[in-house]
Image 1 (cartoon, rainbow, N blue to C red):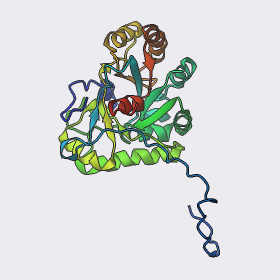
Image 2 (image 1 turned 90 degrees about the horizontal axis):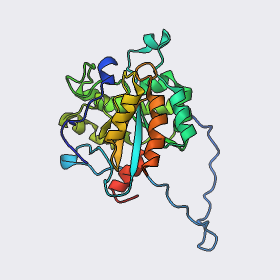
Image 3 (image 1 turned 45 degrees about the vertical axis):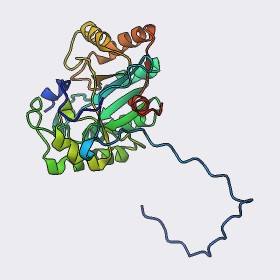
Image 4 (image 1 turned 90 degrees about the vertical axis):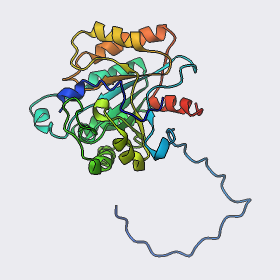
Length: 285
């Protein structure tokens, strides 16, 4: 599950084309500490999202799929891609969001993880906030810029090593600005491309890098049936499926979801978010 080399499954064809201030108060005398009889019962500390332990030499850990023997679970993940320089295209009417896809997931009651770029959250703050505040979903980091973290990654521009950490942190800042609370400490490399240098640079952020083991092939696809067959043929217990939440570049994804979900349920699969799979991998499920 944990790999420290560039993933052989990094086949994200979509990447090829997407190149408080408070008012001061008067000081008050300290109150005496409560006695044991008067102290309010302590509340349990909020649980932290599960992450994987760092890899050798402290490198960022990489997660590809959950345990195969822990029941028939599957995580559908959706990349909300928008690169830093695509503002003019959005202004001209190109849609990088897909509200009908999110509505279908809600209607079908399918938990999902959305890997969102910071630039996407800036362009669609209301949608980002709506997704992030719905407990059915979790938002994770797909970089701010959607620029690659290695050279030669499907034609994407690349981020220099010294800017990789700040690119991740800028995405989290964009989520907060949009009103997204508690974005997950998970990161998906643009294009799925990474190497040891990238894993080393991101180690200080504390994220777990999340890849996938099932490529849906929805990017630029026009045949929903073909994409549906590819997903159904690839899913195994614990699978992470990569799809896209980008209407202009993945126009059949909603249709695919409406076909895949009932069939996988018929086969006995239960849909979960990535956090549940990582928790299971840690023995925390």
